[in-house]
Length: 149
Image 1 (tube, rainbow, N blue to C red):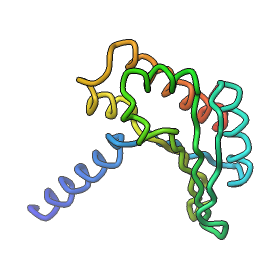
Image 2 (spheres, rainbow, N blue to C red):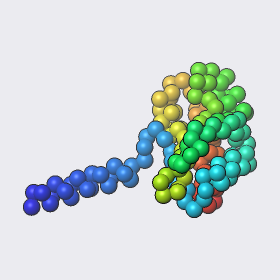
Image 3 (cartoon, rainbow, N blue to C red):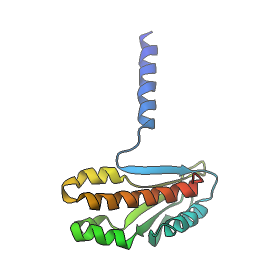
């Protein structure tokens, strides 16, 4: 009986851990599209939101594939850098893509709310809103590729 309770407790704990969102990143899994198609569609969706894709780095071109995009909205960057130039160490935004064994593609980037908590004392409310706007832009581009918009 104790063993059964221990197993159920462990299962409940592990299930709860899987359902939690990671505090450092935002991720979406995209199914039914090839890795290269996801990259192209994401670039197009970002461009449509005035998020400039400055470069794509293909880390691995063999399966499982892994790439990241360097993305920036120059008007957002100007507003942030005027107030907090050290943020340049994190710019441009990096969006990563990797291929899972099942063929799905995971797309993710830094969790902006966590970033804002870390730098809360350095940013004005206006700068924080610029970060949140960029976050919404990138998330909506990912959701568009996923077919949720």
